Length: 223
Image (cartoon, rainbow, N blue to C red):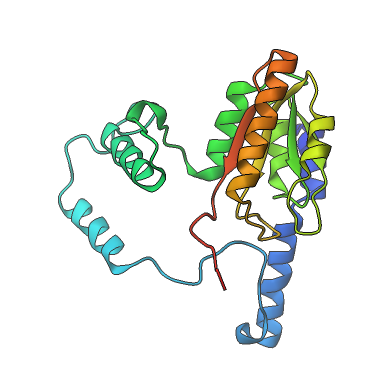
């Protein structure tokens, strides 16, 4: 077979999330959709708001000149300006268009970041339990995954992280709210994590990037 051994191995192992999704689809056909609770893929249960569909129709009926041509690599300028303004409003940090790069989804963003910062053999720290695809994203760009444990509340153990960080550590990925545990990291924890990474950067004389995957930041239920 002309497919690489690496890809053949990945195909054979497959994604357990996808496998469970397929099993769920089969069970729905067997027992009825209302009797199966599918917690595999993060599919929304609600449809997009009516305003979304109206805006799509408006754009189709009133096409802008050149709207289907290539754009700047970082994305449309007006989109980046709008995103920067929204982030500044939400965080109080002065974001500018130059700090914003548009990508095709969160997976695309993570792959772009890792490709940008990783040299072969660089280590990326993730915390268990984690989104399974992180390992593939890191491997895509020659990185080595270091998986560290969390406490009983699924919060990373900073003392364990401090010991694990070495001269080859290039990045730490955090995911809050977390997939799959649902844990939400506190502001105090984030500050302590930042201080630890700054200390380790000084110790080893190398940059250590903190990559924050916030795909679920608007899905928090306070009780």
